[in-house]
Image (tube, rainbow, N blue to C red; front, side):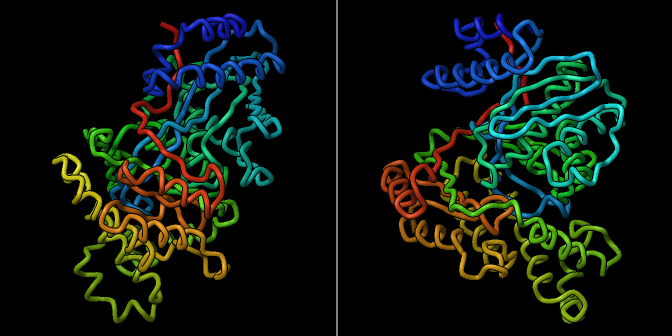
Amino acid sequence: MADMKTLKETLLSGGYDSALKEVYLYEDRLAQQRKRYADVIDSFISLFGSERIGGLFSAPGRTEIGGNHTDHNHGRVLAAGIDLDAIAAASKNTDNTVRVKSEGYRMDVVDLSDLSVQEKETGHSAALVRGVCARFQQLGYRIGGFDATTASRVLSGSGLSSSAAFEVLLGTILNYLFNDGKIDPVEIAQIAQYAENVYFGKPCGLLDQMASSVSGFVMIDFKDPSVPVIEKVDFDFASCGHSLCIVDTGGNHSDLTDEYAAVRGEMEAVALEFQKPVLREVAQEDFMQSIPTLRNRVGDRAILRALHFYEENRRVLREVDALRAADFETFKQCVIESGQSSFMYNQNVFTPRLPKEQPIALALQITEHMLRGKGAWRVHGGGFAGTIQAFVPNDCLAAYQAEMERIFGVNTCYVLSIRPVGGVQIAAE
């Protein structure tokens, strides 16, 4: 921690380069990252002054690699943090108020004397600020007023979880400013999910927050979501001859909360037929035997989504085994199967409310045409709009990126790195 003027001077003189390299991996990215952090410090200084003592913080977006729509029914997920992140400059204040000014948005102001749910904040970032602070307090952790300026490279509505990155960033700030960085990344993720569920009003699972907070390649088993089992998956992605691409097809997730809720709700409706809260607690054999009765009670789409859950939950284990065995061909086949199941059974590639708008389906077909027999492809994240994921052989990368951007626009095909660390304070050497 240092005053903001000194923080910027140390940053620009290379004093944070070691920490930045740990987060962003590559030497040639350091100059760009220094500028990003310098800009967010300048924003802080312009709003709150240069003499304030504070620090720099980062939390990544995430990519879901396997386990599409399984987490909310206590399934397994394979995920990874990515090099697109949200960053902040933050400092304690003395007036029991949190002020967060995010680049491109108006300032969120939350009075910590009232941390109850505010209905008028539903769906707005202020709800996340209030919710994260409230959960910290409920769990017995210290909170206090702070001011922060933030900037994010995690595209909103991209399926890379900009909201989770923001929530984890807030939790990371509170962790280091008031709790000496002692709170476990798993608990930070759970706090972030609570804020999104209870205060923001989105019934998300825990995948996004967990992948952001923990980062690296991780397999997460949510059988008991209060104590998720997290396994690091050692795999040298750089050695496999492929690149990870996320293609932004131009859709937006902001008006699709009901569609996401329906996926979870229909899976849970099936589970309730067996007096269980989630599908993970229902044996697939019992489910299969009951399909004739279930059709009249929950409908065919709910049954198809349940079938997707069971197969996808097992598929995650196959993907992890393939990566650990360095069997990238089997891994790619699992990715393709995951995408097919999401499209046909989970049905989250487009919304039936807008049948003429199917950019994800179009991107998947073009990708299959280009990469059949070579790469792998699937819907990415929540679906319905937004992004697809592709594992592209490096000798096809330039052509693939050019074709995607010809169809969907310039700078819509992102070539990503897997980030080894999650929510973090950027500390000087």
